[in-house]
Length: 289
Image 1 (cartoon, rainbow, N blue to C red):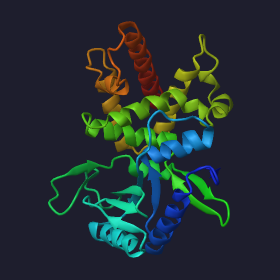
Image 2 (cartoon, rainbow, N blue to C red):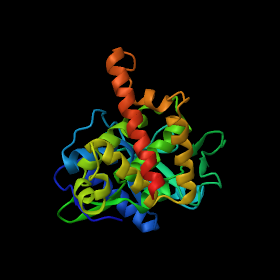
Image 3 (cartoon, rainbow, N blue to C red):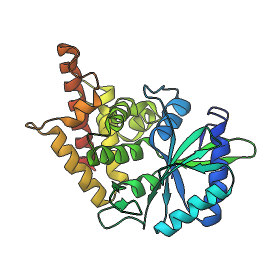
């Protein structure tokens, strides 16, 4: 876990109230959780570092480390019993105080050997949670309320990269939003507290001919992914990136990163080349660790 990031007074007031209830219920059960998805992105990039996102957040996703579906069910029932939540048609989705949709994403012992979970009762819908444990271990501690103090864990940019890359590859036709977030993180990585670290610990990326700020950030991100990922997670990421950066590849990830693909030929070509360069720098960073 990293040092505390203070967001007290900066986020929507409904969020600290929600996090307080979640902390009380999950804490009573001894269930660890952390914020993931677009809410984590906005908390870190926008409210933590003043970098507005282009994609609106419609709900709150958080991961819970549970051992079984029985434990997941008990957590959900405890949240409902608190009186602040209502069940929706989807097992993992609750409505908080009639205004905030939340998605509960279980990981940990509940997953099978392939790091997949299968939603009951029919178990015909599978979801990959590969990378969740790695991201949880690398999460940022965030203060969401000053008085009384309330601190929670939120996925870091490097953790988000791991989860979003695997989530996109798991369902590439459905996860364009994750691809767009990946491009955003790649381009803004040095701007979320990493530039100073680049200068202090990674001067080999700076003392080069034709230094490029954004590409150096992508390479540093690769090194950071390699430093937090378990071997099986890194293997999965390397497999995805090898396919998406190959000379003869279809470049589906890059196309998903650019929803206006083909709008202007010259502009699209330049965007394609830059994104491909960033992904290849990401690969270099992973291999260097």
